[in-house]
Length: 266
View (cartoon, rainbow, N blue to C red):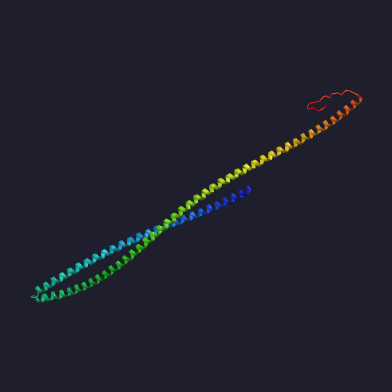
């Protein structure tokens, strides 16, 4: 029965070793998942930094466009002032007809050019407004992407916290398995000690049994010796009674026999 218990303990010990190996594999897998989550977290941080850089660039472009728009407005105002000044010069130079006509023609050409420039500037302004609207849309989209990345980052933090909790649980289970393993080792050592004690007791019983056999053999020898002594004593007693009868018949005096040690006749 102790051998069966010993075999059962060996099987339990082997099973615990397998469970320990499985827990080590699970622990390695959790470490790999934790490393992967750290890499994903680093990637999200890089994407977030890139989005921030893009947002800063868009803001710089927006400021540049605003500066260009302000410059165009200043040029347009300056041209209006020039146009007004030319009109004043035209009014003042009406008396000088040839020169004024030439100047007027020149002014008309310049005015036409200015109008073309103004038209072009208006087109540029419209284009700048469209670009500004596009930049606002891109900025809104980037804000949405940023919000989504923040949500993903929060989700990753939750997953990371969950992985840390699972890792702590695995460590607790691993410590529990180690305690159970140590307890099984102690039980196994106790069983070995009990088995050794039983073996010693069995050896002692065998020695006692051998001693009893020796004592039994000695008692048999003493019993045989006592039987021989008793048989010899019976024979002596019978001979002594026969001699007494003869002496009575022959009126002889009885002769005392010497007794040896133990009360038996010689």
